[in-house]
Image (cartoon, rainbow, N blue to C red):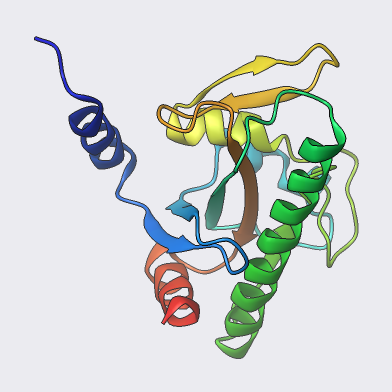
Length: 183
């Protein structure tokens, strides 16, 4: 049986857990937000990733920003788009962090460019954001000519910018925090 692209999207979203959907501030294109449990790698290596954290994060918040362009090429236009997407994510991450702080929840924003925590000390190793998204959401990835990993979204293809936050709040708490900042 051949499934339509829309039905494929629906089935994939149900399998992954329906994302929280919102739109970017400057350009009204989608952002997908998934609240997931930590990966096995994070559970085993959080002291090397987040040396200031006494306990392993309870949730990972994956933020997939849709891009205007496929991101596998290295051009000035693509670099400008990546900068715009990073800025969009950082604004969203700061809002989530601020509400989390108000609710006594520790939230760390991970820099999408280098995989290091933005507001706490860097560890011995960095977050591989593409690997986290691959493991938790099952998205495939490939390598660019420059050796960078690039996600392959089922519908956006390579026009997707992955980013993440980690938090000590439960899935329910983080879901309510995200919902609060979006309303």
